[in-house]
Image (cartoon, rainbow, N blue to C red; front, side, top):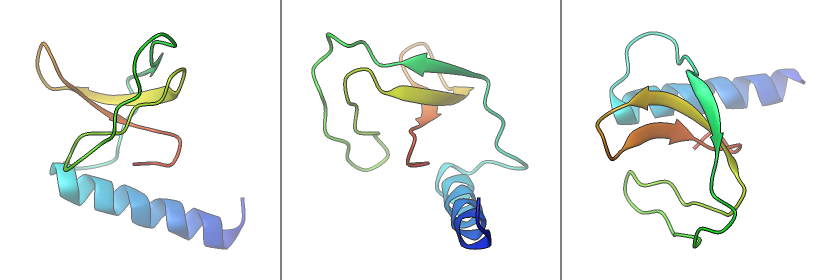
Length: 75
């Protein structure tokens, strides 16, 4: 990883922390895959766009129906 890529990832992490009001480092609890049979959904606001078979990092379990995740583009 080059220095430029590293700084870009750090900036994305800081923006992620600010947007979702997270304190400290971002810890990935687990990873999950979007159901390959699911319909693709567009994101909006704080909702992540979902693509079939995409691998997501689970950051936090917020409630019974929602979890805080990020995709491979660190969104």
